[in-house]
Amino acid sequence: MIFDTILVQVHGNVGLVTLNRPEALNALSKQLISDLVKALDKLESDDSIGCIVLTGSEKAFAAGADIKEMQSQSYPETFVHDFITDGWERVAHCRKPTIAAVAGFAVGGGCEIAMMCDFILAADSAKFGQPEIKIGVTPGAGGSQRLTRAIGKAKAMEMCLTGRMMAAEEAEQAGLVSRVIAAENLVEEALKTGQSIAEMPRPAAMFVKEQINRAFETSLGEGILYERRIFQSLFGSPDQIEGMRAFVEKRKPDFQFKK
Ligand code: DAK
Image (cartoon, rainbow, N blue to C red; front, side):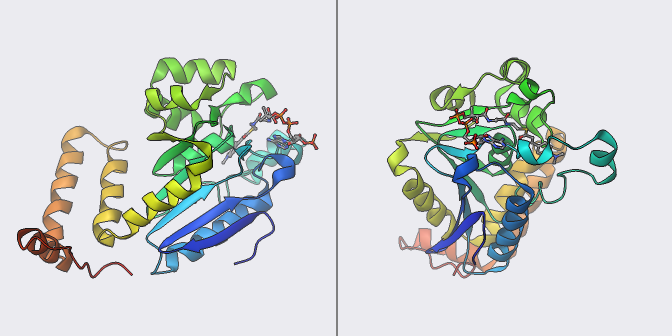
């Protein structure tokens, strides 16, 4: 898969997508989002892929939507053409597990795309922010919602109202990222984590993702009912039989639903 603005590689059972517009700190242009959508479509339809890692460069995961591209839009144009909506939610709609491996700046739309992934691994150099207010707008791709759910009202308000960036250590303490990793090991560690997920029974991994995301969309009672039904349904899967049998027989499971 060859694209102008991203690099796509396969490592074992993990698809690695690297945002690649170094001249603009990986600003998320229309072309980049279109390339990203195509790459994700392809990786999602490839049965050998069990997890997708999204990363950027050492300096920037992504510095947000491309300001030079959007600066001349008028309100009627943004509304009529549903400006930069197309494709932006594709990461959030991935059915396979996704990991954002973030080094350097993840700001504006960059922070929003990272938050659309299932979890974020941060390099010790990572900086997160929603600085849109400094250019006269607000977050527009879920930042005000996903950031608030991740780190709570006080920190989300401060970050969106002041544009202050949050470094990796604070982001881990606040619950925005799952782990902080030395920058030089970030991609390797993300690929290793991705491979361990890809080797899990595929339906169970995809169901876990649905269960946890449901927690943000529903009441506790409904969410627990949803979880229970999924748990029960997996007793119809060959990998439940194999997984439990292997445990009892003290051997490594040989799951069917992975390639
Ligand atoms: N767009 C275009 N170019 C950018 C850019 C951006 N967002 N960020 C950086 N660049 C370019 C710079 O213009 C510069 O280019 P040259 O001058 O060399 O040609 C080059 O990248 C290097 O940037 P700097 O010289 O500024 O680098 P520094 O290390 O000094 O500073 C920085 C790094 C990240 C602090 C700074 O670049 C910065 O503040 N960038 C802008 C960050 C920002 O405001 N981002 C939010 C943009 S608004 C929606 C979907 C998405 C969105 C909204 C709605 N819908 C689905 C409805 C998203 C909106 C946004 O993200």
